Amino acid sequence: MSVDRDRFLSDGYLIVRNVIPPSKLKEVRASYEHLVDTQRSLWASQRKEGDPPGGAWETSPQPRLGLSRPPLVDHLDEKAVPAIEAWLGENAHGVSSELLGVADAGAADMMLMCNPVRDHGPAAWHRDLHPIDTAPLQGYMDDIAESGPRYIQWNIPLYDDNVLWVIPGSHLRRNTEPENRAIGANPRLPVPGWVQTQLKAGDGVVYILPILHWGSNYSPRTRRTIHGGFSEYTQYPSLRFTPFLSPAGQDAFARWERRSQDKQQQTEAALRAAIAGDGAAYIAALDQLHPGRGEKSRLLSTVFFSKLALVIRQKKHPELDDLPQDLRNRLGGAHPITLNWGPAFADRFTSAEADTLWDRFKKLDALLRCGQEMFIPGYQSGPMVYHFDEMPANYTLGDFVAGWTT
Ligand SMILES: O=C(O)CCC(=O)C(=O)O
Ligand SMILES: [Fe+2]
Image 1: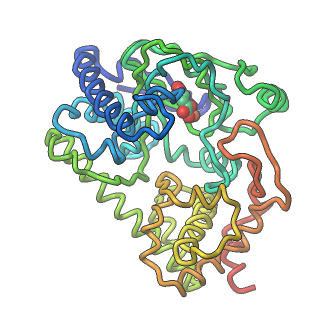
Image 2: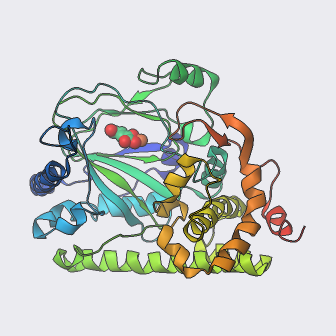
């Protein structure tokens, strides 16, 4: 399979035919349907007071299975094998590696989006980006333009699907004024420049995350669309499903888990270099973490680390309540594609190390703040005191390291 990577990088999305080969579609559908049944009984048993009998299955506009996370991951058995191995085919894993420009892309969150039981209409246009606990859009744009994306996302419908709309090229630029006006006025209507994806069962659309996109219609029409992505930065809350997989499948998850441990180790090395005040070691650790990527990647990862420093600080000092609540909430979960390995990662550091680490990053954190609460439409962050779009002006890694001594 050869794909047009240049077109993917400039448009920000690509349609790939037969990601699931037609000969496999039937068994993949059956496997996912089994998982839907399993998840539905979990939702029914977890329903809260006042919920209908089916719980989230009946209330959510987009009921979504998370195969790689509890609780569903703890219920996977051999019937889940075709669902998981759908991620491993040449047109999913192979194409993802090619588009990311890496030897062996790893499956990140593996999910399935389903139709709601009643009509919920359109969702809101958005970028899958929450700058409050990750980084401003400009940081992603610069990184992607310089070295390509670190993470790519897929929709792979098991039944024909045209729900997703995208704005080509919007992954490499901020919102235009017309976009801000349109999304600001009513985020649930078409926005100028839209393209509606038209996917046959088994086809896929792969896209670069900051792209502006729209779940245009959550109707009761049958929808079973595989959703998730590939990256070199993955983390698996549980791998208890791997013994059921084929030898090649077992090998893939073993490789990706080893790499995840390596990336966590390299992240720790970078943070320890910062604690030690050793700029050369800090840069060397970043280059180990993403070999071949450039200065913009080092800067973006440094912004990600400023959030990880907050994760660690929050774990060591739960009594501190000087952060916005939205940020505190988000710091409670892992986000490996932005190098946030979750609160347990904090256990690698002492409380004193956590304090020094925060000292190293707090000047950068101040530069990421905008002084007063602001809002830009089309993000997964509400009004906030951090910049949505802008990276610190003229800021370099040299400035970051120099800040440790001044
Ligand atoms: O339903 C879709 O295809 C889009 C879903 C989406 O954008 C989201 O849930 O973030
Ligand atoms: Fe989205």
